[in-house]
Image (cartoon, rainbow, N blue to C red; front, side):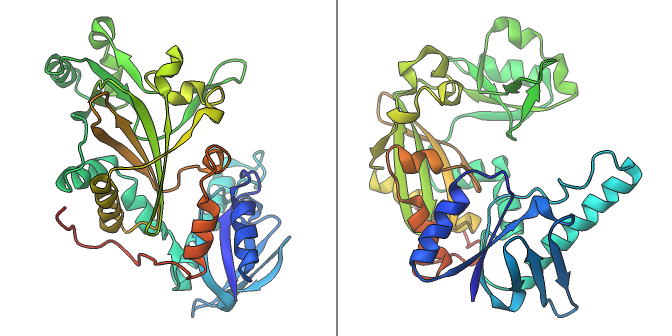
Length: 333
């Protein structure tokens, strides 16, 4: 039997770290770099859901797969860009459909199944469920209506910040990456909101921070780390602005038991076996939930402060730890 890791060849060290942890448990690992499909990796699938993968990792009979870690996807990335767009676009789409069709037809445990990840990514759903579970959430407005934003901002004495629901970057004329970070809005910015007719955005009340948390949940295991984002001026609204400078400043953090229990109930409601949570801790000690990323990064937390996330993933993938097999009905705190 084998555990299938679905990622791409330019991924970071995470797949290798988890593969090592799995191999230490006696598990066979097959890495499927989706960017190599269909040009350098072959996939065959029959009407019964059986088939095989063949590529740089060798041959894997799909009947031998015991679990899947769906981490990243870049299917079709190696299809030549110079190919006529009328041909390249359907080639990428057909390739994606075969890869995702394979995972849908496999019929065994996946961390996490694509349809579960896609549902869990919806920020309005996350906030609604978190609030129902009595996790504190910031007052939030998601809209393309400028007047609604101004009315909302007027009702937030501490001010408002804006952010995107998806993570992406734009590139300037020199090819430099410009990431869209959480940004406070002043009176001038609130008057210049006409661009919302092209792209809706998320607006939240601005909260005073003591520290920020990254809470990584794998199965039933909750691992938290804290960063003093207020230590550097540029990091105060979004620690990612100074992510490199703060990389060694992350410290272990113990969540209050009530918050920990509600985090696990949110994982149950979303049906996730992996989730990377972001929290703000206020100077008064309030723990405010911002979001959960069903496929968030974690390698820096393995180095600083040394969280054993790879070991936890290996335990769930190999069946040594409890698994969630899909979303569960919402339960009261």
